[in-house]
Amino acid sequence: LLQRRALDGGASVQIVRHAQGGYPTASSADGRYVYYTGGRTDPSIWRAEVATGKEEKLLEGLLPGCWACWELGKEGLYYIGASTATGADAKLMVFDLETRKTRALAEVPQPMPPLGTGALSVGPDGRRFLMVRVSRANTDVMRVEGFR
Image (cartoon, helix red, strand yellow):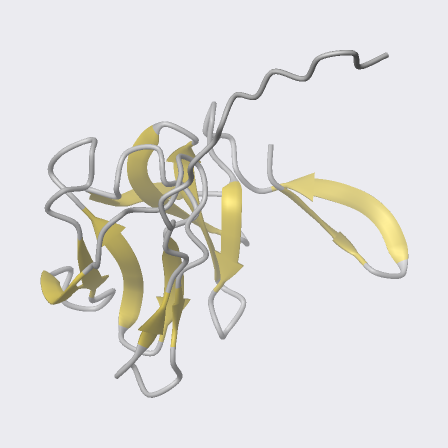
């Protein structure tokens, strides 16, 4: 469960009560809200008002299993969205927090990051983005004789 605490000590205050939520997190610039995913396999992004703890689901459609594939930025919530679990149709999306509308910004190059990772970063001007891409990994099975 997501909690906050002053650096100089004091009691912890629980902010998020969502059963699986709270990872990863981002704070709004004004400190009013904390943003987080619904859970490791939940493709939703939520926010909680720090003062009241009131939680609200903002969007569905985060790439399934890629709970770190989002970032709070200048225009809103940037995230990797997809309608399939494989991410074959993945796109960089932005959810405008004021209008509550989502728009596609760019197609995401394949292959997608491994499950549970993402490392998405959007530049300050919102014109470029960075993300981890997985190169083809090959493994070989070898037999070693006489090994002790």
